[in-house]
Length: 277
Image 1 (cartoon, rainbow, N blue to C red):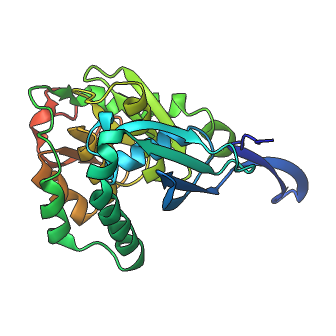
Image 2 (image 1 turned 90 degrees about the horizontal axis):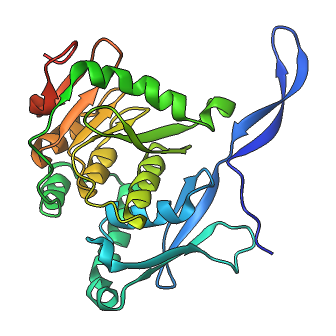
């Protein structure tokens, strides 16, 4: 019988300075194995929930597939009683065409986890896999400043644990389209992208992706692969994230607060308003 993993777990704690023994909730972190056409592709540590979306989004953002039509289905493995395996099936025409792409993705995932990414060479190669990102829209600075608060209000699991990252997609006028949470920033983004993919909402059009932590190269890559042209973070960007955003034509904002933020690449998508220039 399959068991559905829960995103939180009870944990005994001792609170100081009172020394009181109580029960608290923590975010669950468990491995998820992603298999493509029966073959293992990757294992990622994640918070259970929206696992099929995570697997689908991972396949798109890591270059296993290039188009939603390449994906036939993504579903939990019913034979895995612990519930930590997702089976991804490619569409018939894509299965053979993507064979080398899958092999390359496996190699890249191994390299990125074992010895690091290769800087400019990696950005140059990925730039060829990124379609032109949406332009012709702006997001007022005061609208940007409201987004972290809106994201925090919508984080249901975080409110119980304080231990999850979030990725949220907003329209240019600040309306929340979709939010996903996970113990890992990259997993939260993959869940969000997978949710859009499986619901037929890719390409997603103009909007801003907000992440709760820092902006790494990996998150810029994932946003670009999903066709998202505006990435904002409440934390700092890395140098490679800035270089990649500049190359991909993506607006990159860091240190986003209600009354201020820094634009590191392509500020032309930021409209006039408080904090917006």
